[in-house]
Image 1 (cartoon, rainbow, N blue to C red):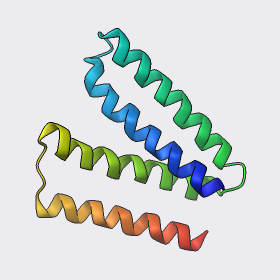
Image 2 (image 1 turned 180 degrees about the vertical axis):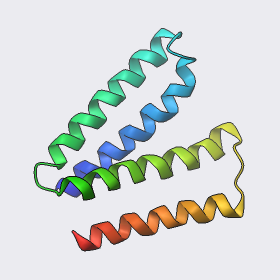
Image 3 (image 1 turned 120 degrees about the vertical axis):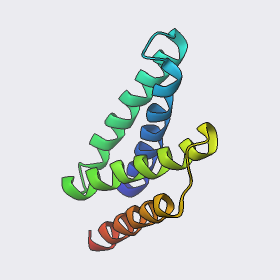
Image 4 (image 1 turned 90 degrees about the vertical axis):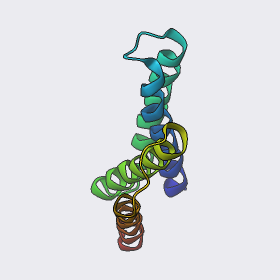
Length: 104
């Protein structure tokens, strides 16, 4: 169950990271409120998952999910470059997350 909670926490991390783009420096009210709410939910779920997962593993997986999701959505939503090197590095992050999960 902790891994599922951690995964959802990572999805909320992606939501707030992408949300930051839409806040325009926290000058837009609705995107700012939604982004701050996503931040709160993400951290609260991370804390809940860490009750039974090692902190180093949990935090690394949480940030990894956020990094991968944010990078992929940056490509899809904002036209950021999808170079082979960039995609390969995202693949390395996926491999690291899988490795941490298997080691836990």
